Image 1: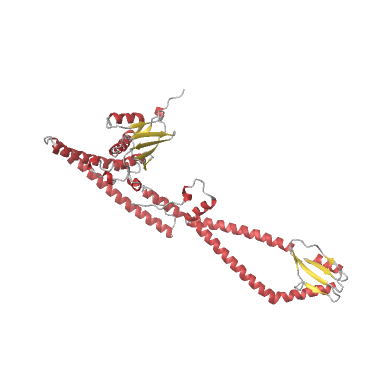
Image 2 (image 1 turned 90 degrees about the vertical axis):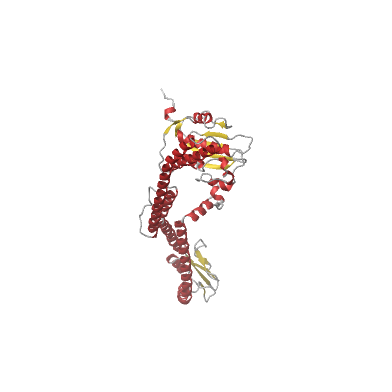
Length: 446
């Protein structure tokens, strides 16, 4: 029995949030994860480099630059004189990116009020000097002009980093592009479509993988073709002996033995017919004899013929127009689904129900019984060939295990689908078919 892990909540949420979408992209995009890994590695390397260089420059400042700056500040203080000359201080601030503050018994002067970008020294620091006449000179660095250029360089660096990130994403997308083609090819092969192999554009590991998948698909295609050919050959060869056996059985005197023999021969004939029909419909391009098909008339024919005298509740939309469909295959689909509902209705008081809904483009058919139903874990297997639930293995129920499989093939050949649901009680078969009004049935304008 196949089990499936529960899907995350965001898979079924109609409007996932941005972090849920980002989480989904991260889970399913190897290229995106590589780009994020590259950016994280680049950031870690950059921070390590910056921290190391900062430590190196700090050590160099203390050992080399600091004495030079101290000597230069001493010279600037000496140039101002004692007491400090305001004119010389003004000339220095005009020539150099400095601010000067003089406090003392004679001179009280400040070159400019503090502003953004101003680095002011504190007492007992490198940029503070005291004159012999009791004045204190505080130098400051006017770094506002210096900060404009680093800020521009920072924006340019950020733009370059974003361009490199986009380039890395593009390269990762190109690098792992073949994975999408391989995935699409595997999906086609899983549906049984081997007409188009996976394109081979590269000769690296992904190219080798695509070639190996193509080889595996070719081997599987050959095995399936051989199986189909053998099955068709056996089915064709069995028809003639079965026909002769039935003719001979007609000569047997009437009685229970004759009836049992004819019933077994009829079951074998139905099995051969179903096998041949399933192989025709299982082909990628099943040949359908499409013609304007009136669903209400088709159901009425079934109720008057094979389903005569059987209880069935029918609810069809009155405005359902005829559509282009294979009338014979659609009749087979409805008959098999209704027969299955009648066989497994058990002793339910309510008869099986046939309903339909049409939205102008899609026809949804439902066939429901009120019997014991099927366990939920078995619903996915009901349309598999020769599969029967435990409650349907008795010979009295009839059938060869291909009826629902043929229904699924008919629906798929028409571009639709078949699924089963627990009706509680009973089982509900849901068929979705493209159903556009037939041009032959539309009234002409004029």
